[in-house]
Length: 449
Image 1 (cartoon, rainbow, N blue to C red):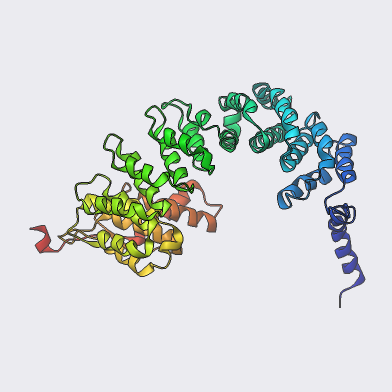
Image 2 (image 1 turned 45 degrees about the vertical axis):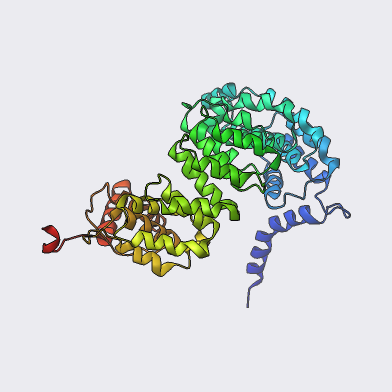
């Protein structure tokens, strides 16, 4: 039986939790069920009275993450606007989060003014010089991110120039990669703003733009996405992202467009291959014959992509053919390597039930019985990702270059189990594990002749 002292200790430990439960439940609006205005005001006032008394404010901001619909009461609008103007970064973050959740167009001006008031170069210099508390700096950056995302949700064309100006702010990009700006521009449908970057732009800038374009689902943007895909002076990843976005939009014009790009030899192979896979994603019946034509043509430069497109469109019908081609020693080895290299396109739920066929591909070989290393390595990695297994592997060589693909998943697994290993110890463990997995192929005497 528990002693009274133990019970008292447990009760004492629970008091802070119970106190917060009371804040989140007992003082809510009885009709809306949302947290009361008094609770926000009290949490902010605590910070004003004592800058170290931030627990309630921290919990409220955390409560946004778990219950994004809780703080959506319009009565809080003026409070959120005032919080954006506060000198405290954490209070600014509360205001930005609140306006994001409200998604009220009335907040556009306050959000825009907040961003215009920031000099991110000066903020960073102050943080590095110790003139600005590092926590305050991080809160202000987070508040700016929330503000940008909010403008993406409720803004209009008037905020596009402001957002565009932030893409080149080095301090912003170093802090969080610049992705939220591109995401906001995509939400606003400002596709031209996204692709208006040099082909020689930094990889991160191009990736940010491409990842934003790929998420566009607005059917009214189909013409702009089509124009983006075929415009020569746009960075290649952004053009490919436009093709992927088109494949996800339900528009009768998309399949024929993707087929036209796929068949046009004037476009480069990367774009045509992406168009073939995207055409398969549409699952339109009209694309099957076009993809089949390329998949059956051994001279087609996008033959492998066409195969994958067919799998995307009709996995039950064409996945077995993919395995057959991977294992057929009479097929061109370069084609088989390319086919295996595109396995990442095939969804997990399509491959997960094909364990036996995947394992069989670990024995892929040419007509002489010599291992097809690239096929075996690619499939080994997919097996590891799908089943968390590390099967034995026979390769023509166990060189570092050849086993490079194995190192990443093996290293991650060892690091998770042994987080305190030094760099050298980790490297030794990985080398040992690869050595235990990979066996070097020894040709039979008749094969050497």
